[in-house]
Length: 285
Image (cartoon, rainbow, N blue to C red; front, side, top):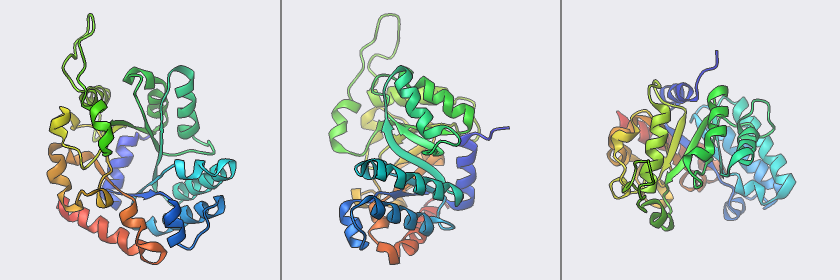
């Protein structure tokens, strides 16, 4: 029997905590780590982050873009990092932010969520700009294979606010007028997760720096939905405030931290991971 992604995520929370370590080999970080800005460099960077995370955190999130910029060699490097992370027992979220319609978005899902795929991850980030119905195929693929999706809803970048807080108008024969774009996505995802226990397998991305009320999102709307929450550390949100920020939605929150951990360098990253995971655990105690 296939174990759902929501159950696997809950098990990771219990065993290893909620910290998600971003694997983001920025050019400047490669320099600080004394690594070349090449496919070989991003491969080594990713493998070192995996090694530091093993036994200290339960989730990692490679940012695909930093590998993609090195072309086919970068993708080969990413394949090695993904395989190493999964072999280490880490839950892997591919931060790919793909989105399209029909067979195109289905193919994206197949690339990242098919067991045995060279790019296999446990979950992927995805955009529903063409409507939540546009991601039905990857959602169904994820649910069938014990994988997960994280749908962009209320992201931490300020320039997204104008689009994500825009209000919908009621369409003929349908309700929903007056809701924000972000709230509409959250409601659709929560509907997909209804009845799942302890958590559904389709999550949303909501930045820790976002005022959910301003986006029309009530934390109670997320009772069964995992929340991937960037915005901690470098972007300003404090780890110790996580339960205050997310309130009733806190049970499903994954605390994503990238530069605040990676900036500790190859010698300090392991200690930084332990410190951040401990601070998060204390916030939930």
